[in-house]
Amino acid sequence: MLSRFSFKNFRSYKNEATLDMRAVEGIKEFGNSLHDGLLPVAALFGPNGGGKSNALLAFLAMRSLVVTPIFLKGEKDSENADIIKMLKEVAFAFDDESTSQPTEYEAYINIQKREYKYALHMFQGAVVFEDLYMKEKDAEPVMLFERKPAQILLGDRLKEKAIVSEVNATVPLLSFLAVFYKFEEIHALSEWFLEFVGLSGAELDGIRYPEKEATRELFLSNLQKLGVEISGLRLDDEKNQLYTQRKIDNKVRELPVFEESNGTQKLMQLLLPLLMALDEGRLVVIDELDCQLHPLLLRQLVLLFKNPEINRNGAQLIFATHDTSIMNKDVLRRDEIWFACKDRDESSILYALSDFRDMNGNRANPNAAFDKQYFAGRYGADPHFQAIQAWEVRNE
Image (cartoon, rainbow, N blue to C red; front, side):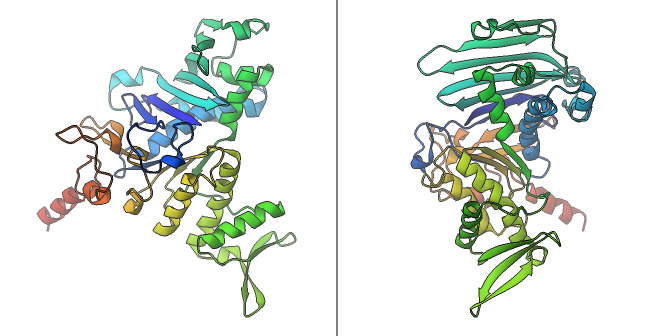
């Protein structure tokens, strides 16, 4: 599970920002949803252009930098050019100092009772710093490796192998070791990066047919629990067409899936990867999760990850949304509600509802109407509706 993720000098984020998945002590709502003190959900709210998507993109960028060379399996570095080009110009653009500094990523990840700390700093498509530490239970962290532009230092666990001391500057050492060497510690972390799911709720790429009968039954039963009365699916291989089935008047009626409502198609596109993530304990990162979804469906999808009977393997869901109907104690803990907005210098900042204190030092009341307070600008990330209305009045 992801424990926390920090990044700096990435797109609209000039200064370091951290998304912390560690449960805040003293917050009791949904206590049974935690996995070893880690949160299953983080929801990002904020105005358009505030930085929600960029916070998710930062994590997806780090993941892409790590996994792309692994997918290529040591093939020509030129084939890595597209991803490097895409991630080359990501620095904060509104001051000269930031554009001359590296973009920094750092993640703490818990895998099989170990905590990994992995840092990766990139500048103009090249690795300028990288390190990997591992901490086992009740032990001090140990260095697995540390890399600078002209030096690679290996910890005791990796020194036994004759590792090549020169690695292409565009390729993370973590990726290089995952491809060419068999270190159990490295394999576990690289597999975690490979397996986590990144999606855009506004740009899903089709509905997959669940090949396994057990998966298909689970998929259909959850659709029905979410209020979509589809009793079966049929894939026509000749037409390459998926049909939904319903039992009406004791007769099976079929409909091409593209004739289903946009909301039903969106739910079907999302549900299968979410169920797989819940079954296998994966991390899912989704931008615009609420796009084309009814608020009640959004609520139910989020609650799947908070149900300990369903989420038995520590799956996590991190998503951005404008739907404030879930901004309450019946769906989210106060430390699962995050805000992204612009500071005075046009740089984005990221913070949690649990960070707020009243004059007496108390956190926000769990029974408060967070959505109303949010729209009133109480948390500093309101969508600026009042400013828009004032502008309209002045220009009438």
